[in-house]
Image (tube, rainbow over all chains, first blue to last red; front, side, top):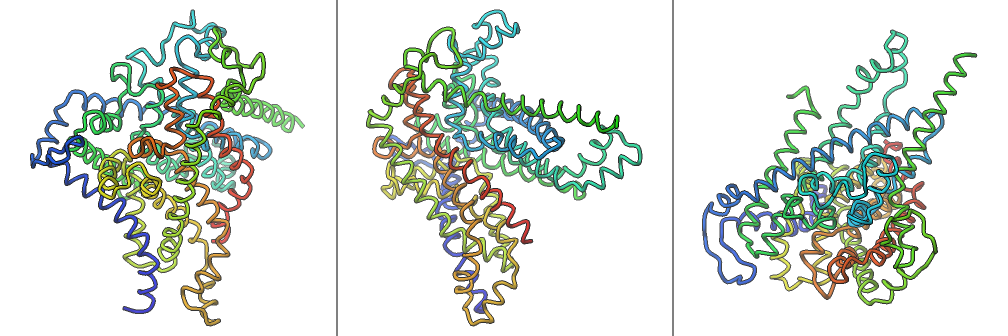
Length: 293
Length: 278
């Protein structure tokens, strides 16, 4: 081994040790535990059950419902975050002067702890005192302040809890998109204009294709984060009413903490992990590098 | 002449739209601030009002006089500082060799760090609970620091790699010519140049730990509860104490926001540093 190799290994070793101990080993433990019946309350019981935990998880109605809700939540949140954020970025880049001041305000929610965002939106939406409904009454959109029960109507709660997510992360989309938009060479757009392309055509044929890698990164990062969401929803509803806002991560947490079923929680955790990896890999190959797809 | 005028009207329209957008975006947080300075009795009045009729620090006095919140702030601060120090100590050297000494192991290493970012924290939280339990570290500051470090190291690695990308290899070579060892070159020449990037990474790492909720919920109980856990508990333990909750939320979130806004120039400077040098 050359001196150079030794240097590289020495510099890498602490990080490798930390990631090994705190990520690789726990993931191994997670997969290992998923084949056992393990109880957090009486940890002496440890019984090999094979794939039973997986079969239980995959056939459970509550698990399936929470998985479906995770998708509903993620798609809904991602759609609005992306639309609002991208439009905001287009608006900022169209500002005649520099948009520094606007972007500064837009950075704000990036620093707001998710727990505070969840709390705040719960306060805006909650029955009786939620100011949002009073605002909608003033605007003549709804009849009375109790016309929409955002957080207690089982049919809409999974969408209502995503408002906080949308508010919190639109700024991320806007700032990353803005950075991407400023990197587009001005003479390309100018050339398209001289060739007679109108604003819409310039956007569709020049801006959008060039933004493709940036959009891919945003969609991957945000989709994974939205699917992992726990704290934002937990602080607003704790998964209620009647499990109507219980997403997959919350389902795992509940089985681990409330029911102490470590084995089944591990099986679900493993499945969750695999799906996220596949999702990220697929998105990477499909969107980011379309030439290879 | 006509063209210039049209541009102007467009400009005003765009400006107005941006202004409305930005203001409505900031509105929810302003409402939180306004609510926290209302007298406790006014917080839950029906119908709600946006501005306080009377300004009062009653809510702040209440949360600061209880022992739970100040203690939780101390825990949060200790965990976030230690997480930042530990994460940077391991991630900075690793990111340096991963970008400046490319070979198969470093590429695999960065890929592993990227994949780690995709792991749902609940999936990692379940086995971390067991790991910390067997080490006797449940409900301790070092235990939570380890859990937060598992999330902070990949983040710090990716950020620092982006910064190191922009450092020319010649910098180290020149130092080596002058008789430095590889490690001396790193410590005495490279690190001082990277101070801006390190500061930005430290800030992001700190915020990640400061904001973290799920691990704190799973891995701590009475002894080391962090601030977000105590704030979430105003819910159940004290009934729906919205006044106290908003005051605690302001105390918890405002310092980070103010520091970030104050350092924004440096942060943007730090973030563009890598790009410019490249």
